[in-house]
Image (cartoon, rainbow, N blue to C red; front, side):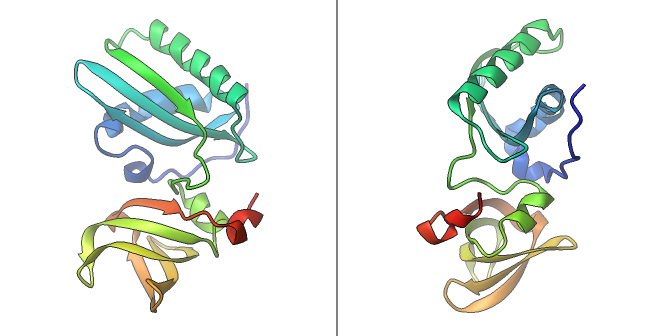
Length: 173
């Protein structure tokens, strides 16, 4: 059995929209591996397009890891009696503009520039950039928002949040 640290996923960020219906199914599979679920996206009706972003405990995911995890997931889907969908599966790393989807991400990526899409506008804007300062209770703090002020945003109002990669931020390995 693989022992891993508990990840505090923020469900609406890790499995948005239709993926929420499948979150537990795929999380249970991935939790039995050495990998961690970063993001699950699912689209389609007749045939599901399943996109899984994952990484290992060192926040790494090379092509061989994607192949291994993809094979594990396909085997589990084929064995599952309650998964009766045609599907296309894509397993990848989170990439350099990775989404932040768990509480741990908001502290690990402190001092990095982020791009946020909001559910409800703040000061008439649903898109915000700023420097991430961490998670505090149920909010995140940003500095230098859109090159101006500091801001606190409730996590429940975040639709999507990604790192904006730059050479200066590449020290977070």
